[in-house]
Image 1 (cartoon, rainbow, N blue to C red):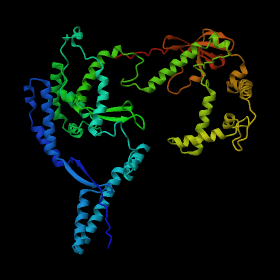
Image 2: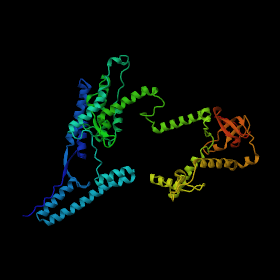
Image 3: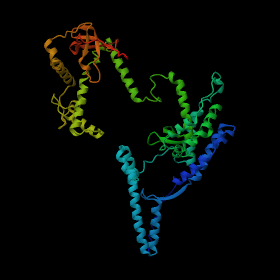
Length: 534
C-alpha cells in the first residue's frame, strides 16, 4: 500500500481596500462639484442637516471608490502585487500544458515585474529611512521581516468578541453614568445669551480643512482626509451652513458624537479593565467644528488662566515648566542663604554671583572634559549618540585623577583592575579636596586678575563712580554702565544704567573687576544737528 503525501495548503487571508485611482478621484470631484447643497437649509433641525450631508458624502465615496477584495498568502513578500500573482498563475498553466515557448515568455515577464516592484518597494520603504530616526528603522525592519508585535490579551479574552466589547464599554460608561446630568435651569443667569453667537464663514472652514493631516487615522464612517483636503473649497460652504445652524440652535449633531474606541493596555500583561487606556477616533468634521469652539472659549478665559498653567496651552510645554521650577528653587535657596536653623546644623548655602562668569567652576570643568573626550573620539564632531555618550562617560570615570584614584574607585572604594578593597574614608577625601581648593584661591585670583591692576594694587573705584565690567565684553553693542552704590573692602555693590534710568537690582562684584569710565566720555549720545531744507 503506497502512502500518500499530503501537502498542506498555504493559508491565505482576504484583504479588502478601496484603491484611489485618478479616474475615481476625478469622477468623485465632478459629482461633488456639481452638487448644490442649498437643500440642506430645508431641514427643520441641525441633526437632519448633518445626517443628510454625511450620508450623501458616504454614498458618493462608496459609489466612486468600490471595495476590492484581494487574497494574500501569509508567506507572500511585501512587494508581491495582484499583477504578479496573475502572471505566475498563467506561467504555471503554460508549464502544465507543455507550451514551453509561452512559458519562457511568461517566466521572463514575471522576473521583470518582480524586479520593478522590488525597486519601487525599496525606494518607498527603505531608502526613505536614511533620513528618519532609529525608531522608524526598527519599525520598518519588523514590518519587512514579518516580525509581529507581541500578543496583547485583553480582559475577558475567554468571552465572545461581542461580549468582551460590551464588558469594556460598560466599565468606561459606568464612570460617566455616575455623574449627574447637566441641569439647564442652573444656567438661567447665562441663558438667553445677551449677544448672538458668532458666525463661521466658508473661507474659515476652508482654512481649517486644509490644515488636516492626511496621515492620521479617521472615523470608519468618514470620507478619507485625503479627499477632504483636496476638495476643501467644495465642502467648506455646506459645513459652514451646518456649523452656523448648530450655533443658533445650541444643538451638536448626534452623528458627530459617535467615536471609535480602541483599548490600549497600560501594562503587560493586562489582567484588569482598569489597566486599559482608551484611544478615541472622533469624526473629522466634529474636530473641525470643535477647533472653532476652542478658539472662542480660549479668548474668553485667557485672562482668567493661571500664569503657572503650562498644560494644554499653545506655546508652552514641559520645558517652560522646568525653567519655572528651577527659577523657584533658586529663589528659595536665596531666601535660605542666611537661615539660622541651617547654620545651627553646620549647613551654609553659597549662592553664585550673577556677574561672575566662573560661579560654577566644578560643573563647567566637568562639561569641558566631556566635550574634549567626545572630540577625541570623533574630531569631526556631529550629533552625539547615546552609545558615544556612554563610552565617553565610562572613559572619564576610569581615568586616574590627581589623588591617584579614578572616579569609579572613589565611588566603589575598590581597585578598578583587581577589585581589591581600598582603605579610604569619604571624609578624608572631602577634607583634602577642600583644603587644596582653598590653598589655590590666592594664586588663581592673581593669575586671572588683569596685569595692570596686579601692579597698582587696590582699584581706585569709589562710591558714585560710573564703571564698566570686564565680563560684559561684546561685539554687538556698547558695554552697559553701572553706578557704584557702596564699597566694602575689596567688594562693591553696583546698579545698572539703562538709558537715563537706574535699575533697582544691585550686583555684588569685586572692585578689581570694575573699569572706571573715563571723564571725557559723555554719559548720553549727543543729539544730531538737523539739516535745514535750504
